[in-house]
Image 1 (cartoon, helix red, strand yellow):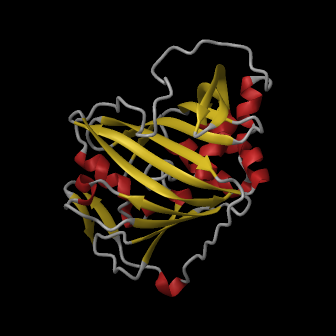
Image 2: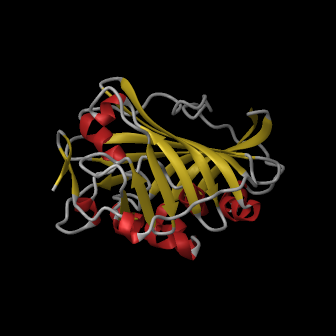
Image 3: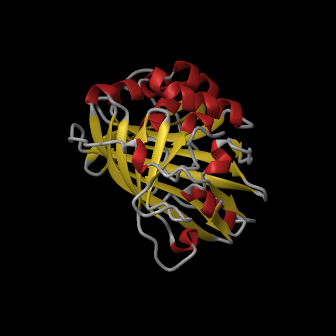
Length: 298
């Protein structure tokens, strides 16, 4: 899947310089990641061997992932978003918790040194909400006590890539568009036996089947990507709960296309999730742009 970042006067892509955009700018001429996203190998590079799935038809099982997570209520999450620059991996990592019923989450995002443009950078706090992304400690001239708010329905990728974290609900909702799904077999993940599925998700189909709260952002992504195909590896436990999913995107910048691997791990189902969205007075109203050499404020 390829998303093309364009600058529109007054549009969200012109107003905001998001964390991962800095990584993509610095990763000019890169090749695709050759690893596992930093979360352990899953054999994604090996040819899948079809075996019988005792849980049912693979495509049906995978498409139910979002529904099952909503039933579970909430979970802790760890995320990674990886690309490669000149053979060197560049990884943005996140950790937090997400409420699938309210579709609200809080994730602390840690940028690599090169992405920050300096030796150290304070972790970015991201609040995820239906149709919106809030970022604190964004840098690029944004006051430390202010939040940047982005309307994800106006982003050409629906914030699947540009925020540095793929929204956990969006990761699951993408699987509603799963097709060509193969059941690979069972494996163990953090002490839990899981079933491994490999396939390709169609983002347009996922947008049409998504819950109303997710439909806007996924609908924007369906219009903004040059292809709807998203290869994935998904791992579900015996209850049908998604424990891990890896999506492989291609991000088109002003230079060569960059491969981006987004991985999400879920654990501790049912944990309490406290998310308070910032009031209007705490929202930064200036403009932030992503320049070729890094973020700049206008």
